[in-house]
Image (cartoon, rainbow over all chains, first blue to last red; front, side):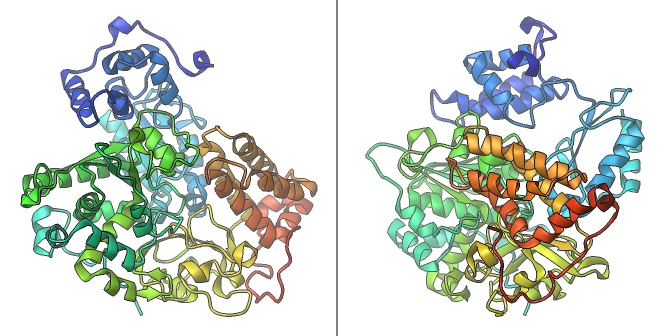
Length: 175
Length: 453
């Protein structure tokens, strides 16, 4: 089961995070009682993902297990459960467009279809230039500002087709 | 009558997110007052306030606190549930984003009352920028002596940590949330034991919603009895309503729960009416898990009385003709909305969010989604309607946690109230994709309600 869900592309020995990331994970561990370092797993995976180009393969997960002194399976269990952890390659920018009821009644389908056409990709795919992945998501808690998408750490709200065009242009120039 | 501002009183004050400004506006006065009270006195104030859990279930907060076990030598914890993920709900986000110190203040008082020296805010991982806001507020509070050892010479120690989730609705369920903080999959636990006895790391734990905890400061400031004078009946205090969908003024409103639903939707103080001059078709008044009501039953109860924006009135008539206040996620649908397709998106949500632990939910949510997808694409059969009814009935009440019920109720309610639209969809096949069913009789007063089964 896990073979199909998690990819292995490099050896664990090649995985290395920044000094800052290791320090942050060590600080996280101190937030929980002695011996409960497993509690730092989800926050640590967020850091690991950011350190690994937005997605994690087996060696990255194994490395996290090593840092937190856990069995690798404990890390796989969690990484495969939570939607925010990407276990397959993603583009530089992941466009996570909310598609649940409140966004849908405000036109999220139109936004998703527009992105599909503009980038010539299907849902879940990455554009040929490797810049954009379209990842439809379920309710992100921005129902009053619909339609919307999550981009990295921020929300882009009150979307229109024109705003999406501008955003994609802006990101292309940044890349 | 407009909003009653208690939690959001200072929302328009420039810089209220910062400690200095918050403090100038009577911030942290409730903590000062609480440190001169005994923990029993604080508990009494919260009890007498009548505050009910603002996450959706509406369980009395003071009563929940009174259940916490106090075994000798075992640490206790307060965990704030900021996993806000119920479709239609974005009130906690508004509070944390704009007035984070109100939450910190509530956490200090609540932790003091419960005897928690390390408290956690479990926030959904997607609220990335709010995590930064909270971390900043916590460090400001700490720098000003409101956190750490022997706070303001009270003898009380407290640290607050923000713990992010990673995209799982189920972690809003309190035991799944605790599993998640322990670094596991968000599988809800079987109760009992309740978290108040064995919670986080098997220690006594109270889990409360952001809005509930943020209400504690105002309750201490004004006193429980005064707080209880706001509102009506057992719906005391103020409630944040996050209004969204096809309305002119989506946003977060603080109400004293005495408004009629009609006023809430049409008054310029609140939703400002239906957008684009259209008519009201239906509404989910308390987050996607609660039953959807057609306009007629939303505005008036089956007895023909006006319906109000509070716990009791919204649930008047039970699930046959009523709904719930729930989390306060108020989703409005106009006459052009397609009930079948809308229900499909809601069922897709629950299928996506089911943790997979209980078969009725894991399998049932898949079937609900599949059948509704088929129907909304114009390939439904007439027998699908009864099939949906049966599947939802097999989920409800048969799962460890309420996610199963939450997936079943919306489907049951649309078949109960919008069966003719489902039939119309089946009869018209793919042709219905380019048609709108419109309002039908949903805007007319209903004389008697026909149960689907």
